[in-house]
Length: 342
Ligand code: PEP
Ligand code: MN
Image 1 (cartoon, protein in one colour):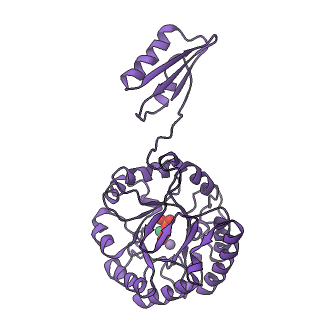
Image 2 (cartoon, rainbow, N blue to C red):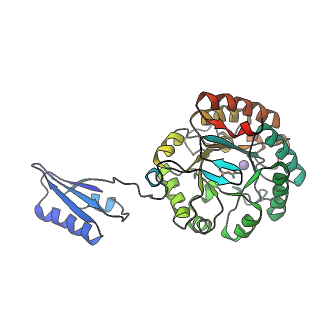
Image 3 (cartoon, rainbow, N blue to C red):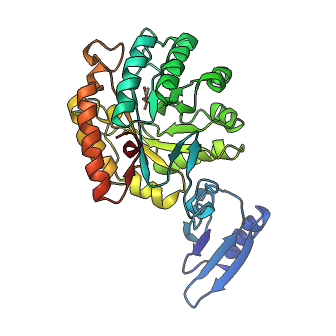
């Protein structure tokens, strides 16, 4: 942290700041110029810089290191590749995860699983515990649903990604799920994050709808600081003043996160835009911008899906999109996991 004192700061004001820093465990390096004094504070402690901005005689305060350590790019400059069975996430290959918003029954999972695998997806998605805005909406089929998606995934050589909403669901995750999804609404459920951090199950952490990129990386830090470093970040659209779309996909988050963090970043265009026909353009954009994966809602009969049908692609739309993604991947120097299947 660097503290720039005001031009006419008195010696006692400068001493006051130095004492405060030392009492908080910082080593202080003082640079006294003709016009003003600059204090460099070195230490591992994370402080609220506003506490220093308010001190008399202080002009401005700058943080020079990020408050997240384990999630920062500096921690692993070469980038993280998360290996789950035969799938690698984060290594220059864009992994496609697809499936229904919610698990409806085994036949549905099996049919969708077969089709998405044939098109090149490596992971099937589907919620058994649904975080619905209204408590009266369908809440998910729970363990029965997880059994269905697990069986379908195993039939077709797919991994399972599914959301859990509370720590009591961790034993079920251990039994049925390859990647735990942490939903946008739970990004800052720190107890859940810490508990997932104590397992070794890979976690896909969705960005909260009002969360900054720093908030997302600090949420990842909660999981990692408990020992689980297998964290995949997910941009799923944020709330803005725009009303034509469900959320606004923050494409900028992809290159920015790649610079700030070594963790893979996956994009969910379905929840971002919320409109079926407009998901493919966003998916293409995310691929072009360097996303390490895509999370897509796909259903064999989306008009009759139990939830999120309006933003869920048909299997035919999915097939077409996978073809387009391959072309874009080639153009931007990425591989698609689809290569394995086609
Ligand atoms: C989902 O993926 O089905 C979901 C509920 O997403 P989000 O947490 O991003 O709203
Ligand atoms: Mn959904």
